[in-house]
Length: 417
RNA sequence: GGAGGGAUGACUGAGCGGCCGAAAGUGCUCGCCUGCUAAGCGAGUAGGGGGUGUUGAGCCUCCUCGAGGGUUCAAAUCCCUCUCCCUCCGCCA
Image 1 (cartoon, rainbow, N blue to C red):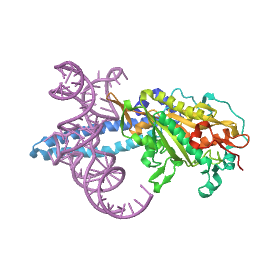
Image 2 (image 1 turned 120 degrees about the vertical axis):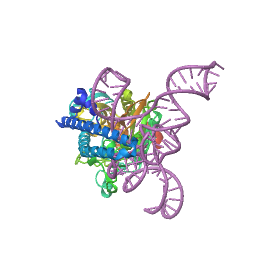
Image 3 (image 1 turned 180 degrees about the horizontal axis):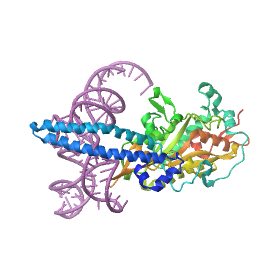
């Protein structure tokens, strides 16, 4: 949720929202509704002030004077009762409108949409296409079975089998141990959450159609462990000395992928269910941009540690999503497609999420909203598929990346099929 | 699933419908005292919104005692719903 006060007073703040391509007029609607709300609020508060004073007087008055005072106070009560519903209405209007406003883009963020994102740097060089693309290779080697998964669950599901399953576990182990070494608290959160949790995490109402509903709408399957991790300190005031507070969450992620018919239908590039290790940081507002650099550096060291060629993209304002003030994606070279595809993503939400969650920092008696950040440490399935192409040998074998060998127990899988 | 008990400030823990945003203690901050430390003495110490002012001094006010409704001139205190926690019974990993 945005800061209404800043929206009223800072042109730069408003500009950042406009750059996200919100519906023209929405900002003015919000401001008008907010004016109305504050006007009514002042009125109601003045009435309450009089009523509070009247009630106090009754308490102190001798019994014989009370009936007259009570009658007068009752009149005030009626006046209030007439006005309060109007205030409630105005408040409801403001909050439903304000939830539609995205977090302003940071001034450094490039203007425009998807095509306008800026490549910050490239590491490693593009490679030629392998004999088999990731989907074919995974199937031939028996690492992935999407056909049988389709029979029992539908399209966009997969079995990971044999070394494919072991590679997944190895990746998780390796990445988690990296995070622990960096001071992250390892976390395996619930993947079913309440509606209110989805709202506070900022995924509802915007992304509701991407989420699976369970138990008659009581619970929802998370699309990322960011959701339960962001709720971990709701309504809490953290001590500034404890920041940054970093969590490395491992969970299965569930996504409906509505509106992606026909896109990325091969293999496990885009599936309804996958496992992911996610980094989530609570940072001091003063240092959250440094924290973002830290998260990005960790992501790079993981992708780089696997020997994958990649580039870093500074996502343009129109493509940031509602919550991020700035976002860097790491795109990895996918040889079979001869182009870079997104593997990880790292965002600074500033106080946008914390405002709704009520998570604050206390620093010398001063309390402020924390900043929250998240970054993908490892989207396991998608990482595997990049490995299938980059570690496929000319003879059709698969070689395990060095860093994973301590966790797999094997170094090479001979050709099959 | 059945039966009870509970939720109060950073923490522990009082609280008769009005004198309670809230006793007391702990912790923390400042000051005094004191070779050092500890102890002692004094003072201060919740959050959020709005207005005004300044620009991060202040002043006024509203809201908040798990959440949301209700009763009342007045609710931490009474009633209802929900959430969570604890104990017991049953059931099941």
